[in-house]
Length: 270
Image (tube, rainbow, N blue to C red):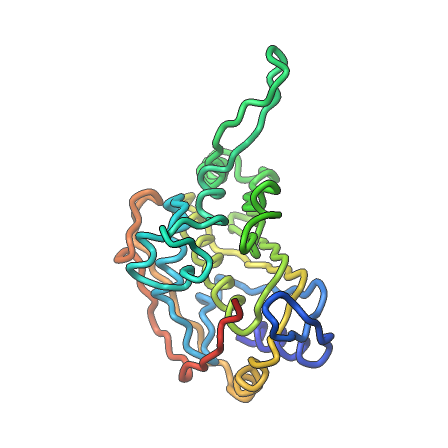
């Protein structure tokens, strides 16, 4: 994907060296942005192999609304470093997607009543009943959690928008690891967009991504430079069974025509 490689080039060329909590310096740029056309193919990077199976398990785990990794851990270890010994996770995206704690002021008692809001469910309902709505917003940023969490949400809010019968998604991310995180985020939210578009009988539009702190860890530079010498190959196609969102399983998804270059290993900064 040329859009991704252009992002890599911009940060390598213009990034400012910064220290951070991990102890490994980064090259950092402010407010980077790119857009891809989802109708042109499923945006799974071809300049290195991306673990689609692991990403799919992660998205299905988000959609389950679970706030622990006990089931996810059977398929991928990507969240192990941030969970406690019992598998509980301070910041579980799916919990906020499906069960966001919303405080509503009660005039009669003078206190706040807390109810859980299924944000994904409400977005899907709007896509079916009022696709021109400008209120299809999902957030994973709950301040009481985020300021104390071991790893607060990186990709913290996204918005859906329908134009001419096609579903678009815009993701805002406070912090983005370009070598490891961004390829996963790009694929995950494109997959989610296709799930919702299919269920709402909409076409595929664009995925737009804003990264507030877009950074490259200095120990990732060589691997990214290697990707810049690889010419992007045709994108694969994602096929999803005609199954309601709540019933989707891993076997309902298939990537067709994926022909990436060999993997490139990047160390995870914890």
